[in-house]
Image (cartoon, rainbow, N blue to C red; front, side):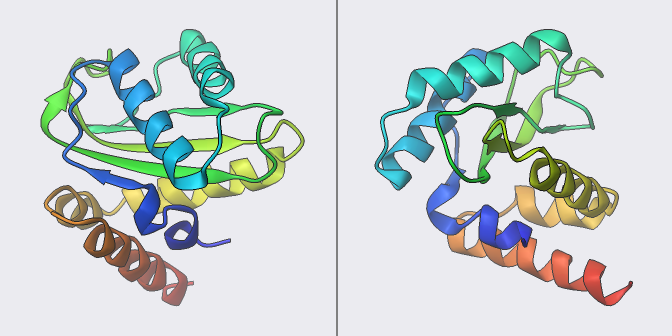
Length: 157
């Protein structure tokens, strides 16, 4: 499973309107529900909020990786959100978040969920990945950046 497949262009939102964590969860879950033509909004929000209550997923300078597990979906999905103005996220470093990689997974699929988080963490170790991704202005270009850096990462192993 490749990140560029999980974070497909229809699941990428450039120019988030949200100003805080709760608003961004709602905006990104709405993006997912529209793209996937599903009505599991409340279940997804509950899973994300439950996970976030344990510890902030604002883990790296300008980056958050909110994630949750629920039986409301059958496959692992990713939604990428890019904010130009920054989001008050209660991040561990206290700084605003500009990139959000939301991962939604079924309860039964912990292994795929963890592999996806691990691969994403490896890409985020490259500061150029963040720099290029945060400046994108359209979902297809953002998806192309993910694919480019994933291919570089794979080639290095």
